[in-house]
Structures are given as structure tokens and as C-alpha cells.
Length: 152
Image (cartoon, rainbow, N blue to C red; front, side, top):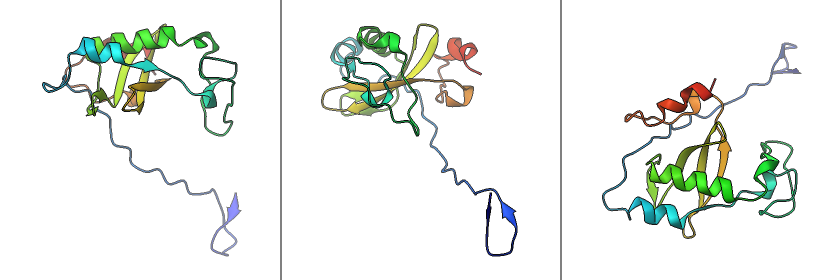
């Protein structure tokens, strides 16, 4: 609590939330490379800023202010990369940036993840689990409906 405007009124700080543009699942673009080629070219790279233990991303450097820690079970990036590639093969993608989807959604070990393109030349992604239904992208094709029960 703090005093605002010198009026002696105690108020909670005002938090401004910018309106986030809802992400959208889209059909595979007709001018894109075949899904199998794109899937073979991508990989999950993670980030040491989200790690609490050593991983393929390097020594951990967890940011304590806003970083969600990654599951230490994924110290090797083989399983997340396989899940990312499978999701692309299933067409769980957003609009493209260059030759890769900007976002990809897919399941891994009973959780639904959103992967974000971090290097459009190399096709590398970071990913994080989705928790709430509101986090799902607009999905006019209903491709992700089967995973909705995993979210709150």
C-alpha cells in the first residue's frame, strides 16, 4: 500500500496490463516448405535463464523475478525437440516468420506446451507449459480441443 496524490488515501498500486493479441492456429501455408522438411529443421534449445540444474543450454542462471523453472527431466533436449517436430507434423502452428512457424503448440508428458521461435534463421525454439484455457490460441479448426481438459 502507498499514498497516492497526497490525499492521505491508502491505495494498492495500479497495475496496467497491456492487451495481448490472441495467438491463432492457422492452416499450413501453401507457399511453405512441406511439413516434414520444416519439422526436420527445427529444434528446442531452451534457456539457462529457466533452468535450475545443468542442461544442454549450459549452466543454470534462473531469473528469480519472472522465469518459470523448466522441468529438470528435460536436461537433454531430445524429448522437447521430438515433441516440437511432432506438433509441426500435426499442423499445430501459427503464422510463419520466414520459413518457420512463430509459435507451435504440442503435448509432452501430459502437458500442453507453447513453443516460441527464438531464431528464425536456425529454426530454434523455447517452450513453456500452458496452464489456463485462456492461454490456448484461437483454433477455428479445433485441432487442440483434445488437450483442453489438461488446462484449468
